[in-house]
Length: 198
Image (tube, rainbow, N blue to C red; front, top):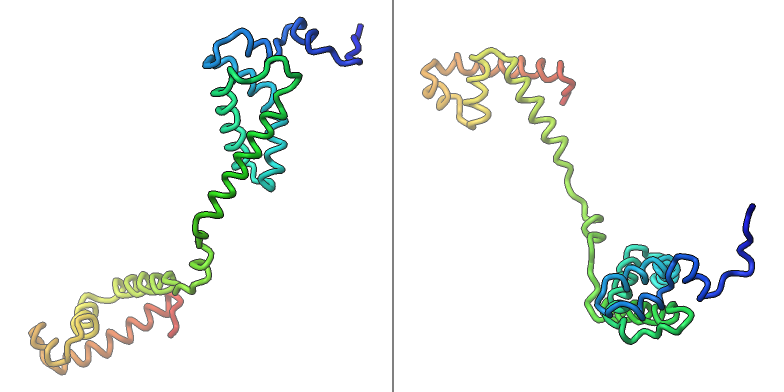
């Protein structure tokens, strides 16, 4: 058989039905006991959070912080709470509202933080394309014969003249010129095979 819950049970009846009211905990325990804050949290967390979310403009994380600070202040003031009051929600809401106001004042007193917004709009060169070209050129150079790699290394990468490269490698100047010509052609073909056309 289903029992009716209308009219709602009185505050005294709630204590008799097994769930002790907060006033019971405030009267029976020391003010520094964790039971007070547990009872406060169980009874008022939901409604207080909903109230504070509205105060913070929908910022749930800030609201959670405010509720936690409110509970800590209630725990510290447990000996001053009125166990005869029907609800502690008005007191908790006032404390929470003051915390939100103090937080806003602190934020307004500090200089405005710039954040990452301006940095997001600064154009930054995309280095990925250059890195990709380096990888492709390195791969294309590995595809060349050792003689062609060696001559390109001396003339292009080390920026040596034909005469200096010939002296460093111990080969005639004419051989250096012809190897450079054929090495550049082979490198161009290797790059085209890898999709690089310019």
